[in-house]
Image (cartoon, rainbow, N blue to C red; front, side):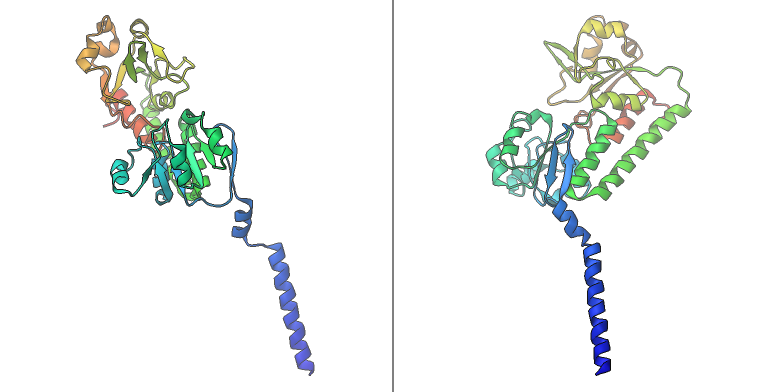
Length: 320
């Protein structure tokens, strides 16, 4: 009888100790689920997701490759008709394997609601409809990187929001290392004067669209060892004139193959033949480079490749 009492007492002690452990050390995953995932986006808006999202919509073509790169592409239920990376999504839409929510700046709210997303990633191009989506109970996260560091932070933000923080960190570390290698190579060469760069995005009746200090391309040019000709202009994509470009006299001219359409500049020969441009250093020294417009139309996972590409144009003796 005495032995039975001892055993009962020991069992009670184990139960009490176990209960105390549970109270002091609650299940962490349950605690995280209870607290949710809190995200503060590029506009300073705070969004709390109840749990890791399983249904994602991307209305930002720059975000979509990031989602696939960090391993959550299989959770995407809707994309825009402008999404073309990392896959040919138009074929997916046609096959019924992915739903199109409409255009980049004209998504269908009706389709978005029908897909019942846990989270939506977008940019400020949809500012007009973002309040409506939030009023309907949708979780909307806005991204809009202005420089390379912003791109890194955007990748980390997307990783946190989708439960893929470790993969996002790994991606950022890889991009950082690649860009640092470019910077180190240029620094080691002890370049006396870095070349000035004119990056032409578009040509229209209004003038020549280029990149200002608030654009992420400005930072890419800087990291590639160049000086953006319009780095003192506060606008993101300012419009300039033929005369200003001639006066500023860039050492290098970069022409994307397309930035939302066929090249507006025509050809290199057409550019060289522009009135007064024969006096520009880039023209006289044949420092006009055609670059892949598809590579430079998004701030995202290809940022290291963007830096490497421009660096190769500016310093062909250092980079193949």
